[in-house]
Picture (tube, helix red, strand yellow):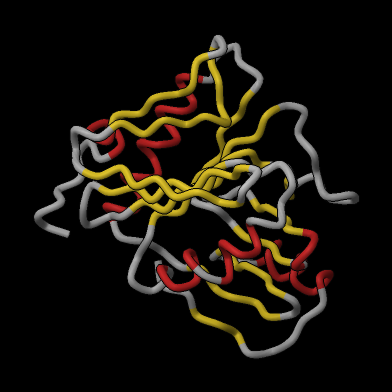
Length: 197
């Protein structure tokens, strides 16, 4: 996904007005509006696979998965973003006065691209870490089978790498029948031609 900054400071109200009329999504960071246009097919396949896996697992559970177009507000940094995939445990918390902006994910995942890698691993991850409910953050490569899995712990954020199509991602913040969720990387990368990316 290519990020193009619009270099005019705007208020939150102007940002919401812009989003209502916009044909593409925009993120907002302290008055700066950042256009978020399309992505590569592999990016969309991976995000779609992850969402589909989670959505299936969450039947009759207290979790809900969201994909791409759901806006997240990060109050401490006054930032509005659209994670590729996020999970919220009920009850859903909305930004006061908004019916379209959530606040309480337990898991956020970003599919990395050349244009977003620095932000997803830098400023955006720093902002995500200020969300009290967030327990896990994933960055997913799209040109190789690799997931960087950050987990909040009393000692800070711990990194676990899961590599290769035979790898298994263990999500501890999400439990189904008191068992952590396990996701095969082969399922996450299903239909992605890693050699062509």
